[in-house]
Image 1 (cartoon, helix red, strand yellow):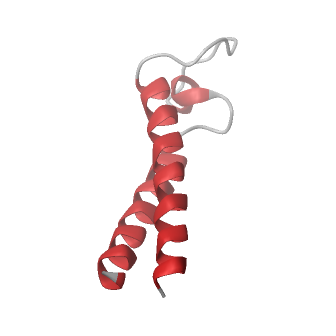
Image 2: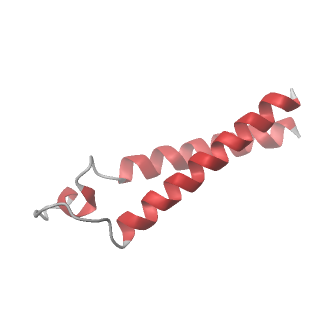
Length: 71
């Protein structure tokens, strides 16, 4: 069981790093590819990546805590 949790933790951490790198530095994906303008709200892909990041952070935390108590 511990090996499964460790592998799941590694997969979640890699996915988190990718999602965080995809997100722009507070300016969104639109300006990352040349689109300017004022920052208003996150829409479309930006909103989905932000929500996926939240979910993965919570899952990563829960798996880490479970792994700590199983040892």
